[in-house]
Image (cartoon, rainbow, N blue to C red; front, side, top):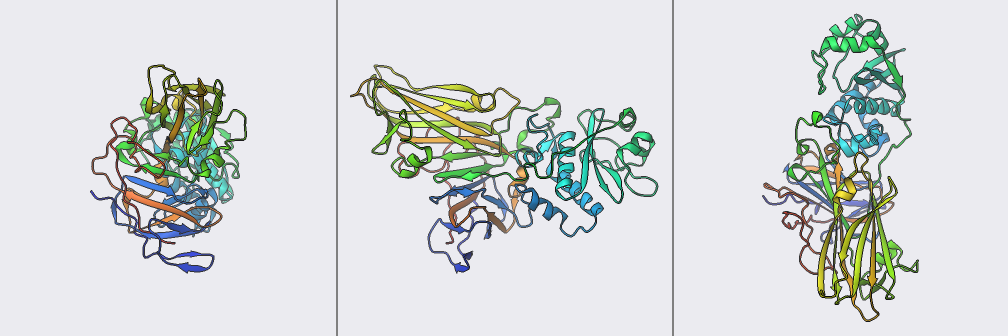
Length: 499
């Protein structure tokens, strides 16, 4: 099928009080904190790509359907959920429906993230009963309601205080227990009178172990305990910076990858039905000053140097290096470092490490270029970040910190890097992306302090190949596409533009 192209040519962007119409191709100008509505061709999509065409960073670019809540900001999210709800009971019911809709029962998040609702909503979109209870109680606190997490043997749920009493809300179990007067019972009331469960609205409790009604009565009768959720002010917003010369693609369907911390007993369906994932692409033009500025080259004695748009070593018999780091609000599930360059015979070596901030380890990815006397000429090498990034479980990485070291064996030796490409694979909750079937309009939004140039593209692949699609080769890059499994290069057509 042909790609689904954003058609923004008729859209007027309002920047600093002035209305401007389309004039430059492949450029969309937006203003910090403002949103732009763009027309699209209705239908399915499988790849969403956002490119930074500006010389400045873009803060948290997102694309959503009209009316779709922005899960990256807890304040905006709660305001949207509770809009038009006047009583605390109405707000609690709306929050319950929201959690049921935006978290799937599948697998528990990684233990390090299980108590972080903003990550559960944005990075996972799935969880177990504790995830449901923590998220609902936290959102209720964000909405100004008093809430807590209730634990019984083998299960967790929420309690929200309104109308002068505590009320049990079981977002995971979809079980509402009402007393004879029609009001919701508290966990303590169910503990004292488990027969209240006979009045609940579901017959079975849908967990992998499947509590039946009698087992649930025994669990409540055994006792209840309480714990506070995260404070409402904790981790209320996730942020992501798309730097110049970077693009990010998001995938639905068969390209989906997820962090390998899932219990098989929870995995009733494959990841492609539960998760979304994506790839950040960084393909800098080494001839431009931005690369030197971003990574601070020249500030340390052992820094690599840029000569005629190529990375090289300033002195022989000395190791020189560059450190490149990215931070993400989503788990890292893989990636690649791709280098192109030239080396003469016996010129030296290039090695790479991935630093893991969680356990302060440095994992060697191997020698990109070996110091072999018989080899010379142009090279293209790929270092796979996958195993180093995702293992050991259970804690995922939320940052990629690469160290590249070069050693030149002799002053007259030639060892240089002419092109660098970094790809980082990420996991994301699908509810934070546009719906699988696109409406007629979408909304692009970012939080940048001023106007930015950005390109947004959607496409649909009827038979997608595994792995990320490749952006077309950019300025300052040479050679063929680096290999990546059995993924075939795919060119994306781009949107019309506004300025």
